[in-house]
Structure formats: structure tokens, C-alpha cells
Length: 99
Image (tube, rainbow, N blue to C red; front, side, top):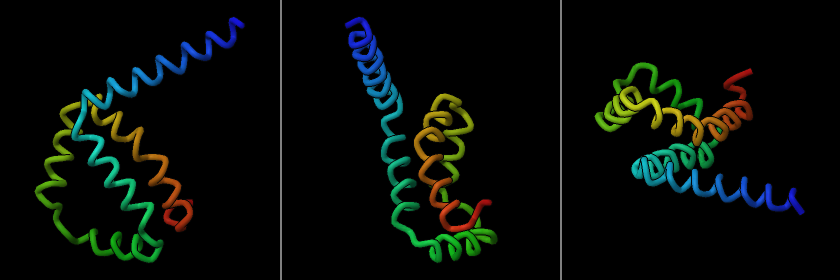
């Protein structure tokens, strides 16, 4: 019985923590979801083409603003990486972009 209450406690703290982070960085949800969706919906060929094209292109103003926000706020940066890293790395691995 104690184990059941302990599990419920951990789940409730996790849910409350997730809601608190979402409220702390409301813009982060939109951006992270867009990045994840881009990688999930793109084919490997598209990602390879985008990677090749981006090497010689300057960043957009929106990308620069996002990068500046992530540099200024370590908590936001950590939360952004937590949300996008697994889907991006998985897709890159599937496409042979990383060993």
C-alpha cells in the first residue's frame, strides 16, 4: 500500500513540475513543438538537403532571437534541449547523420 502512495506522489509531483515549466516558458512550447515536428515529418533526403543548404546561409532574424534567448536563460535552454534532443537525435541516427 505504501508503494502505491509513493508512486502516486511521484506522478503528481512530475505533473505539477511539468505544468510549472510550461507556465514559466510559454513561448518554448510552440518553438520546441515546431522543431520536433520538422524533424519527425521530414524525410532523410530532405534533412540531408537542408543540412547542405544551411552551411552557407546566414541565420534568420527569428533564429537569431531564439539563440539569444537560449544563451541568456540557462533554464530555458535546458528545458528546450530536454524537449527536442531525443526526437532530433533519433531522426539523425535513423538517417545516418550521426554514427
